[in-house]
Length: 283
Ligand SMILES: Cc1cc2nc3c(=O)[nH]c(=O)nc-3n(C[C@H](O)[C@H](O)[C@H](O)COP(=O)(O)O)c2cc1C
Image: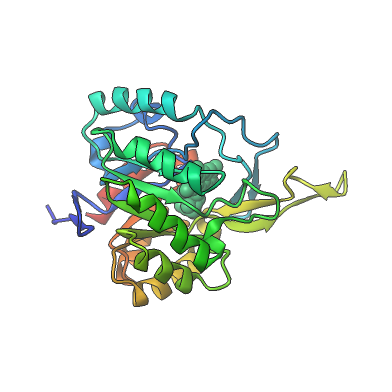
């Protein structure tokens, strides 16, 4: 067997394949499909302090080789997720990563501190890059100054490694990456979805109520791979690459441009056990 271990500096994963937030539920839903411990780690769907209904439907729209989503970070709230994590951890030793969200900096810090205190949680991923919360796709990861302030603030009350998830929609993604690592990020992950638009010809209106939505899937892989390479050239912390991964070969592309690990997203919707297949293909 090849040694597939992935060194994140603060922790070594058994292999570099991690499931991406929002595409793998809260982990439990996938227990019937495969042994989650075949993966390096799993990231759960993003979580806020309180339960949220998310955006009105439609929330998904297929494009050639891609998927537009405007979920709006629907979720059960932090207290309910803590219960889910305890149940999940009792059934699998796979490292659990919580994707932390917030309407403002206070909420990001509060939610991060809450999950940082849980033994069952291996590390946190700060989702400063969701394009579907505010109209127009605004998020902290579009601005290096805001990113630095927020990461410093969140790190103050943290006992767990912090991955900061970057947006491909920033004007200068490398500058935001540098701001995040200088502010104390233990690792960087990218990319979140690319802002896109779909139009409904019947109604002559945008398909989504929020107008713009986030594009993921194989369509974004070359764009994401370029950004991951650019960030890796300047990063002194480990980088977790993602965007359109559907095979072991896709994983190797990301590793070759400098990523220490990867996340697998949209492919899990059409093939629930894709992440396990991909980990085996890497071997
Ligand atoms: C339906 C859907 C929901 C998502 N929800 C989240 C989320 O809650 N938090 C987050 O950080 N990223 C979220 N993402 C972004 C993915 O984690 C990932 O960054 C992106 O889809 C690119 O990877 P892929 O092309 O392999 O899907 C979501 C993506 C999709 C398609």
